[in-house]
Length: 598
Image (tube, rainbow, N blue to C red; front, side, top):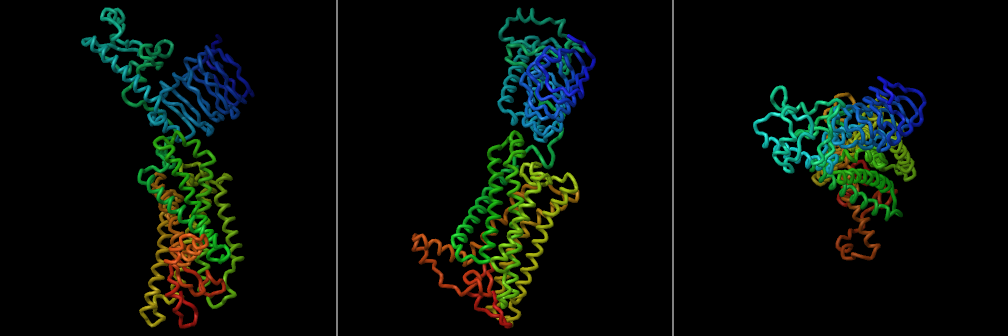
């Protein structure tokens, strides 16, 4: 065997390593910055290498399961800046330092029980460190085997102490502890040499079990234990600590997608309300497409955008159920897979399209009331279609930027672009918050103007009771619309702005309550506030039921008398549709200036 102190093979454009390639004895072997594509089986068989490095081999994809087999002294291994997807464990039992930095392709990290002496691990993904922190959840079968072997070891050690109650021993290796149940006392006396195991201090020291012998490590465990671990330190009663980086942080904690049980349960109610409500709106409005008006047209877009929010939450909820209790085992496939990208796109797209459509709905109703007596100034269906094309293009652009490299949907388990890495990402995230802020301010101003134009509480009617009561109802319903928007958008905007300013007040664990529960409430509330609870929607629903020829008793029971012309039933009428407004009672009121009142 060739003997070297160090072996430097850096930057030699090496493409291939044959089996038994390096039968050397060296403290360090460097194969950095080459073009190696694969490490074959037994590439280092019979070698004695303490430190081995493959850093900077971007073409290195595959490590054979037996790649490091036969190297009994490997203490440090560096596979940073490569393209490996898995790490073999054969031959790495003695490893102390593992470096796999800047290697996003690594999907799965082996169990901590495969690395008997590992002290430091410098990895790429946060969730890989979770595997070392929670080995019982990372690999339950391997953990159960460890617990069984630990119980056997403790039992044998207690038997050994019971046979020698007045002696103090320094046990050097697990092979020194035999299964005393299979031997006689005479055999034990012959097998245990008192002089060999007395410690200098006369006491048993746990740390002595970590000492190395001449070859660097102790023998393997006695076959009676049915194990292949290295030394007794591997069977500590307390969990072995590994210094692992990058540590789980606020964006990537060692928790499930939903985090809390109450959130996991409540999100399904939000999903049900969002999906059922918006599907109901789309079915009814699209079934009556022959009577399509501007409000109906806008309601269809609003229902579709909110339905996308429900689908986004559904994807998160399904992943949460599938990976319950061990999400970090699924984190790579989810966060870096197509599913997370689709979910993130749906979330941003639906949020932006919903905000845009709500703003246009409010502006259309404000415009219709302001110019109620000027029929030629009403927004036409063609104009509304052109506006919504712009809204779709804007929403697709904002949702597509993270797919093009501006921010990233993979930075967290809920697939939202929440990580600010540079100025460009901060500008992108700031624009999302500013869009919501501008939209909400616009909606508030428009509803205030609508309320004032309707009389402001009946003052223009001389305080007449009927008029004042009608206006109070309208004011309450407008307050409900604005309040719902504020409840959904304001908390997310506030904590988002503080995070962009560099003073985050909540981490992702608590932010999930805002992003997964409060923010999507609009998707649940909008179909009811803007459509389902209006009389026009109920008329359309009864019309649709009547067309089927079924449930005639229901149609007759709830049949409404023909309403006066409105913006829904007559597009040329000057009266627009406001949500939750009693048309029969309000339409009969007329302003003193001659314009129609809602």
